[in-house]
Image 1 (tube, rainbow, N blue to C red):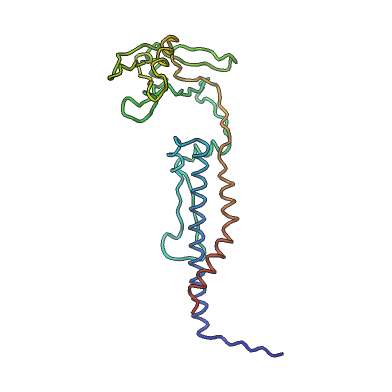
Image 2 (image 1 turned 90 degrees about the vertical axis):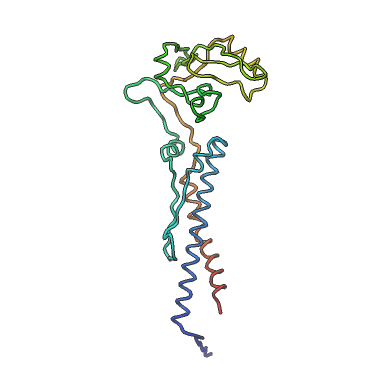
Length: 242
């Protein structure tokens, strides 16, 4: 049996066209996979910490190289603008007080005016230095004996609004809110009866739970990449076929 093979067209042009198709396929695959890894990491953050962590989720960024043109050897980079936060929750880090201090001061949900942050002067947290300077802070030990709750005395401020809502003022330093609470007036009266509000938890150390899997997301992306490249190459080859 004799087989005859004949190349139709210019071999160099055919090879060059195939190289260009493979370059486009490589760039397409790396762009898609880089974006998918970034979106997976963003979803990990929001699913672990809820909608309030949207800023940390959006801190995941990506870039594909080369930034322009085509290449057979492209690269995708995914990084975060808050690496220390991500690293701590990926490792499940143990955090201890530094500088010879005995305790970490962890702000509670009460330690922000109206329960919110970043809304001008009414959204700033009270600092430990402010509590010390006020001379009003006092401690309540945990039943376990492993830490303390750092409190401020609570008083009623002037009632405001058409419904004369009760304002609660902690140590004269900040207002704690009753907004967005069911039965907020009853809640406010109950707080006033206790006469104090917890501002900080004082703990010698905190063990963060492992909530993120950055390495796993990267490895899954690498496993998907070859199949993505082959599929893109087949599409490019069909599109460039005479």
